[in-house]
Structure formats: C-alpha cells, structure tokens
Image 1: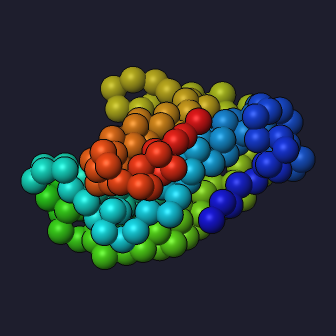
Image 2: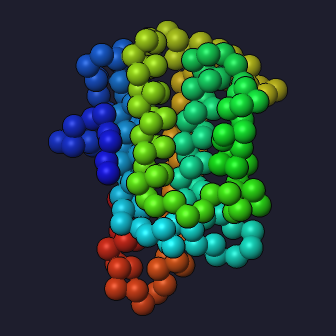
Length: 191
C-alpha cells in the first residue's frame, strides 16, 4: 500500500535525498511524510466506506483521494510544462478536481487499491520530474492568479492541500464507521 520514496527508518527526517538538490530533497521528505500519513488514514477502508457521503453536499473519501491526485497532476503541468491542462486532461480529471455534484456522481464504486494506484502513479511522476530540477528552479518566480508565487510555494501548496483534505477524510471516516464500530479505534488513529 505504501509507496514512499524515503526509507521508513528516515520517515521523520527532513534531509538530503540522493538524486535531488538539497531543497528539493527536503520538500520531497515533507511530501512523502504527508502521503504516508494520508495512506495510514485510509488503510483498510472498504468501497462502501470510501463512497460514504455525510449528506447531499459532502464529498466521499474516495473523491477526496482522487482530488489529491488531481491536484498533484495539475501542478505537474503548471510547474514542469508551464501550461494549463489540455481539454482531454481536464475531462479525465474534472470530477476529481471540482468535486461537488459531479464528483458525487462519478467517483464511486472503486476499491482502495484504485485510489492508491492513482495517487502513486501521479506522485511517482512528480518525483521523477523533480530529479531534473534544482534549488534555483524552486525559487523561480511565476504569476499565480493575481499574485506572484514560486515553484517552492506551488509544491508546498500541493501537500498543504492534501493535509487539509486528510482532515476532511478523518471526519468522514468517523461518521462512516460510526461511534460503536469495532474498527473505529484502529481506523481513526493517525499521527
């Protein structure tokens, strides 16, 4: 289930990584840890639990996991290819990116392995692309909406967004599993 780039004995270190410039290595350490905790949060969830909706306006855990992958994919295109998504790419990721009604209708019926494979596929590509970049690239200033940003902030935003959605996932999981579920104590424990 876990597809992290940092050895488990170094999971709690923000340090240099072989094959990456120093700051990119540290950024990847942070991204890696965030992903590890996200995967621990959803460990062993069933398809029914991944599809659970708290109400008619909420997102499912599965939809949030796919949203996390879509955010990573979008920022790959923006930062490594300096472009927006093509129409074809947008069609593939639209439900996950926008969530809402479309996400509730289209993102259902998948098991946990489906979401983990999507998360790993996109993140592994990010890690490969980051090998081609250096710390100077991270500092490159770019327009971001009406403000100025840099690639460092864009990738910080990717895992900051994941942390935000993991909070939602944990809340939904508590509701999906219920207060008296025998799995509740195991499934809701995260770092």
